Image (cartoon, rainbow, N blue to C red; front, side, top):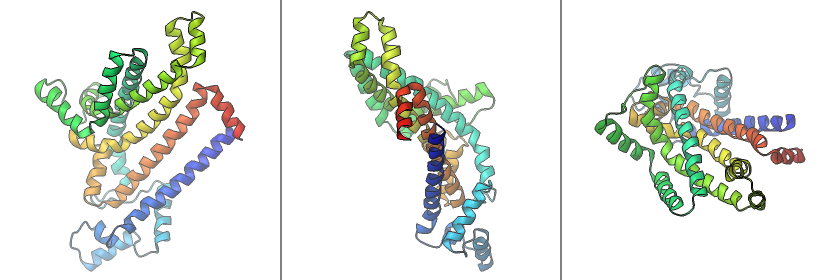
Length: 316
């Protein structure tokens, strides 16, 4: 296990270095002078342009600029926002709690809803299965902004059950404000996870050891819990980890639709005005979320199925 963790840690570092290089280089691949992007198209005096180039090290060679940027990130310095004239780390830190609340809420809905609906479809073949397939097909094809508009129209405007805008304060008020955004964010992924769960459980239901357990008189609920659902959890956790990491990107649309002051809304606004220091920092956060999610999933797999632990040990 120690060797596995060391290899995974080395892989994470290499992945972050490569992606950080690509993220930083994207500014220089864009047509035009980086200084003009940082000025946002505003006219400026030669002295102001020189100050911008000095502040963002634009007069240095590309590799020197990248080294200074990545060195600053290692020490917690993400640079200064062009739009807000504030430290990028402070800007993101102020908005991160709202985004984490939204991702946690949506992730809970996705995990509970996706697994429950997928298991229901696998165990109730026929009409229930067909209804679930149609429903999950519609859910996966529904963009988040369409779901947001529908949920606001029904549950906020017509029924008045939930607010349509704002972050909320305190636990109860925050949950009340984030219910509709979390539902809009989770809808597509619930359909996706339900389909993965259904397929994985159907594969396990057809295996020989399940038939043997049934022939020996093991109660149906025990067969499902011990022999079907447990073995089906490996692909389910893999997809869940990828989904939760991807929610950080998907929040941009939902936070904008519901007026939430989170990282996603900050990303959309920063892309619009070409605030590259902010875009670069958030992009790197997304990459870090993906690699951490994959690491957590890899650590969970041996706990679910000990055979995977032996397989990893065999590769050492």
